[in-house]
Length: 299
Ligand SMILES: Nc1ncnc2c1ncn2[C@@H]1O[C@H](COP(=O)(O)OP(=O)(O)OP(=O)(O)O)[C@@H](O)[C@H]1O
Ligand SMILES: [Mg+2]
Image (cartoon, rainbow, N blue to C red):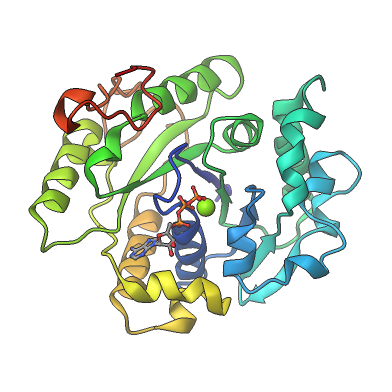
């Protein structure tokens, strides 16, 4: 079975990308999958979440992208059973500038990762890449290396804002760089079933993304917010919490929706649909003229 390389991306900040990468990754490992997590965010939140002392690291993904070092020399093996991590570093924030004129700069991660995956005697079932909250060169590298995109969304009013831009970029990358790239999963995060708004937003997300939205929604759960400061996954920090339950359910759902071979351009759950239609960003009209950015509409 080929490795599923998945970029968790959303240019909007604080929507649950890192929480989902860490805890979906841990949950996939828990149910028997072999997982590699790649921290591609200069904030290094994923690395910290996984309990890694980022100040003690000699080498990180930064050195990989700058071309000096192979992934195998950077990867932290066995941080958990079946779970390895490629850590990040604050220096990564400089790559947008440092790689500004480098030829093929959007392919650096893919080339390094492909080399590593080809060498590995124990193949990974999943590689999850945690992206920074932007659509810059780092996210571009993730989209070039991945075959799937998962989009975590916060179950709040502005959830869909910026989605048309995100889908436009994914489509552009598919046309120009990586013909296999597909948005195959949308994760509704921080869902509060007591709020009408949360329920309405998830309905709206389902309306736009259809079957690509995972049936499992991740409920708002304080343990999920506490776990990172302990350097623990939710399965370690609060194994009986809603957060642990939801991410384990999500992991089972992700495994059950494994793409069949030869369906690179079509999501089997959305027959015949190759491109998601552009999502009209909820405009300023519905929120008193405020625009959280990303839609290009000035109010
Ligand atoms: N289901 C949840 N319930 C409660 N808190 C959550 C949940 N999911 C995420 N959080 C918290 O919300 C905040 C944002 O989550 P997270 O860091 O995963 O978002 P992100 O998209 O990675 O952010 P950034 O764009 O800055 O990288 C964090 O403090 C996290 O602990
Ligand atoms: Mg993050």
